[in-house]
Image 1 (cartoon, rainbow, N blue to C red):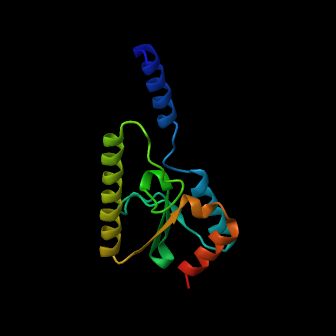
Image 2 (cartoon, rainbow, N blue to C red):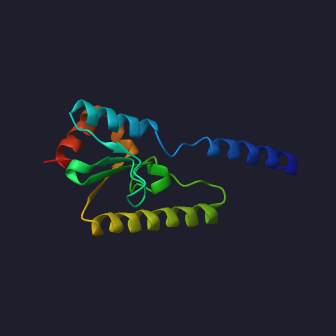
Image 3 (cartoon, rainbow, N blue to C red):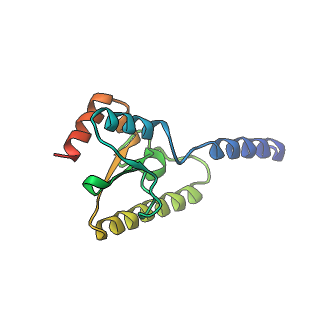
Length: 138
């Protein structure tokens, strides 16, 4: 590939990556809709708790993180694919994400809060998502 083509690809990838949201994602909104329809009330993105959880249910001392399968490496998930290019960079990035997630989970637990992860792929089927939420509070 010529350097001009590589530069164009890099610019396009940079635009794509910068467009990825960290708050109010489609999976997160789906979880919020199901929670709300079930009568649960919550706060969003609480900065006073470690990791600024996506959803905070103070009444239940429970936080919910809605994780993207790709970024947070959902084990055995088809959405957690590995990029073919810059593998060293991506492996380092994924390891850092996993380590940070684990540290945040520990900090939440040390505050006597319960932490739940709902994976992006679990939001594809609304009935299954509802069942998972029922299981969280039972």
